Amino acid sequence: MYKYFNNIFVAISSILKGMSITWRHMINIRKGNVTLQYPEERWPRPERDIGFDLDSYNVIRSRLQVDIDDCIGCLKCERVCPVQCIKIVTTKAETKGEDLPDIGHTGITSNGTKKALIVSRFDIDMSECCYCNLCVYPCPEECIYMTGGPNSHKHPIDYEFSQYDRNDLIYKFAKDVDDEKISKYVSKKIK
Amino acid sequence: MTVDNLINWFPFGAEWPVLTFVTAVIICALPVFLFIAVYALVAIYAELKVSSFMQDKVGPMGQGVGLHAWKFGILQPVADALKLILKEDIIPDLADKKLFVMAPFIVFVGAFISFAALPFGQNIIIADMNIGIFYILAVGSLSVIGIILAGWSSNNKWSLYGGMRSAAQIISYEIPAGLSIISIVMLTGTLSMQGIIEFQSGTIWGVLPNWIIFNNPFSFIAFFIFFISGVAECNRTPFDIPEAESELVAGAFTEYSGMRYAFFFLSEYAEMFVISAIAVTAFLGGWNSPISGFMNSSGWGVFWFMLKSLSLIFLMIWFRWTLPRLRVDQLMSICWKVFLPFSLVNIFGVGIWSLLVG
Image 1 (cartoon, each protein chain N blue to C red):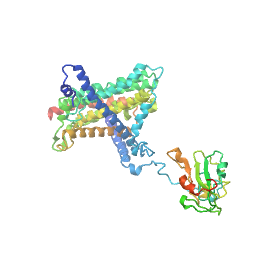
Image 2: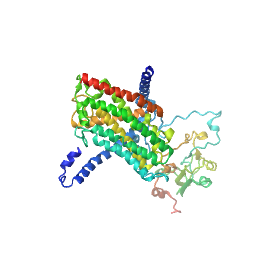
Image 3: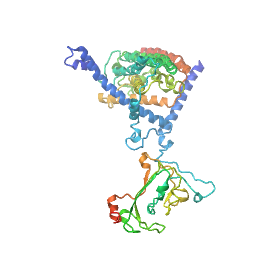
Image 4: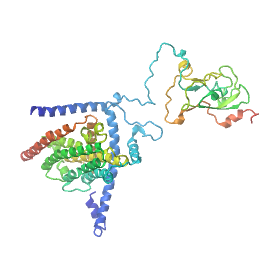
């Protein structure tokens, strides 16, 4: 008889104890929440130390980045890409090496080359990119590169680039100017 | 809004009595169905959120583009419902097709027709029968037939086990639930839902609301016996052996998909509401305000009734995400060895109490 009532008492008290624990967790959800809303919030990236500096990496396969002000529109990266994920459209400028602030065009690259072409479209579809790094080597101006690693000083590393829409994975590097404005500066011969 | 009022109000009642009756019933049933659908969405959302809060998660948040579950995942239950509706309706080859098709609707009807006697407010009750609580108890156990049919007609070992377990469980737990209701009926001297609620108006010693749960120590215990038995009748988690995921896949519902499964889901939530509403009516004062004379008009009655019922539903959700599932033998021994003797003692105690005090 004692065991019977003791059992009931233990059951009730342990149920109350358990329910108070879940109640406490529910009330303190703002403090105790362990979920990270991934694309909006991320864990900090841990420091990486495998015995040598980031600069001495040869290749890091992250996202492709283009410094469009340095691009001369030579199409070498587009031709070498094995999966054709780079699309470039250029038009010949009227005068070589002239700044056109109207359409955000700089005449001279950081290497000192005078640009003859206006790059009106430079798209890289990162959903197709195979991270082979082949487009980086032929670039005469070193303006296309993988972010992070040896290029950390140019662009911080970006390896997730998670998006809600697949179209957002097409990175558009060219200055966003409409064709009419560009056509003012296009060489007379082409016109 | 009683059915009788509607029938009396119709001008052509004398000429076409059957047509009048059917129209009145349909006019009453449509809002109830809409209410169940909307309430089920709210309850599912609450279940998702409460469960994840209790486990230190955030639950559905829906931070996508467009109308992706909107803010804080409010549209998540709508998306779930749409998914269930759009899914293919699969009927197994070897199933007993007629019974298989019928079963979910029988389960739903069992929960649905109980709403006819629920007193939502002073005047808002579909049919104020003089045997209201008896009617609900009688009709509420109809759903067990549907579950057994579902288990049997699926022609699946898990479904059959689930159906059998559910039959054993629901029928066992009807007894303590019914006995604790009997102690209430002894106290109030009426079986009518409105009569039971009117008994509970006023206060005890001017402080406590005169609810039956506070009336005497025996009815205090009877409330917990009734409520826990009610949770068991809904097949909710501490007592969900009929659909135990880890043992029986989904028990009687294993072979169901799409719309039919949605009906089982809907009837589970509807049954939760019915159990909570009976507990509120019989023990917690129904549509009476907790503070006597404070917001006690008939309009606020609906508010108090819904508030009390929804808090009891929250309690059920709280149970579910705290307590682990019982074993079959534990389940039966709780019912027969603890609840049954206690509720019998309760009846005796209430009898003595009303003889000496009341």
